[in-house]
Length: 151
Image (cartoon, rainbow, N blue to C red; front, side, top):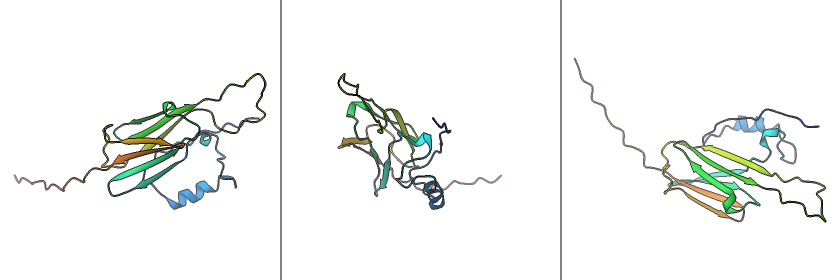
C-alpha cells in the first residue's frame, strides 16, 4: 500500500532559522530520524556555514559521480540537481530490498542579499560524496543620502 502525501514546499533563505518551527518539524520525524513525509525521501541533506567572506553549502551526494550532478545559479537561488540510477540486475542476482533512493533530485537554496551570483566567482568541489559550494559575499553598499528638493 502506498500513501500519497503532498510535498511540503517552503522557500527558505540560507540564514532562516526558526527554533520553534524546527521543533515542530522534528515532531513529525521517526526515532531513526527518517522523514515521514513522502516528499522528503531522496532530498539530499545539506549543511550551510558562513565565514566573513562567503557562504559554504555542503550537500551530501553519496554514490554519485561528478558528471551526474549539476549546479545552477540564478539571481536569488542556488540549485543542485542530478540523478542517481539504480544499477541493472545481473541474471544471477535479484534484489530483495532496495532502501537507497534512486532517481532525479533537485535542491534549491534561496540566497541571502549581497552575494556574488556570477558563475565565475562561485566554486563547487565534489569530494568523497560531499559537494561543497562556496558563494562569495559582496561588500555592503554605502548608505547614500538623498537630497530633498523644496518647492
